[in-house]
Image (cartoon, rainbow, N blue to C red; front, side):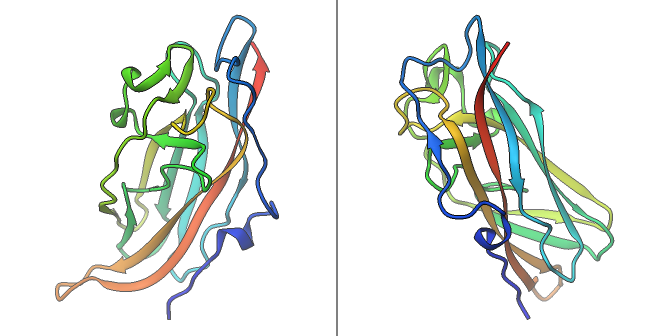
Length: 201
């Protein structure tokens, strides 16, 4: 029997998520302040017969001239049989933008500096087309897979990386490998809340 978990029901934040898109004169980094990211909430591991453990960590907390903040999302098959985790866009975590399309999470090879609005804002000038391809994450017993994602403002924002709390989520399907065809055994949604603020250097 397939199970489904709603992120809205398992994250403690209720109602809408506030975003504070302040004036466009603000920069992501300057001589006194810089934008900082943190994880304010994270969904529990899915209630499944397969023990999959998800984590999200901050790899680079603040934006600077060298690049935007970076988070790392991972999934580990703790003590179960070999499984295939399916999702759209890319392996491990496919949530490219928050649910309101204000912030994009992109791997380093999915963007370049020429696509930014200016050299003091990590914000896309134009939306990057995506194929929506289905990707597989194959996890043997005890195996872990992770992906590093840059935090960048979406092209629909007037200023730089917007400030506030933003919900990211991905729908997953779990398959058991089989010679006659992979067997769908579970489905769930997992995600987290990313918070962006300005801090003193």
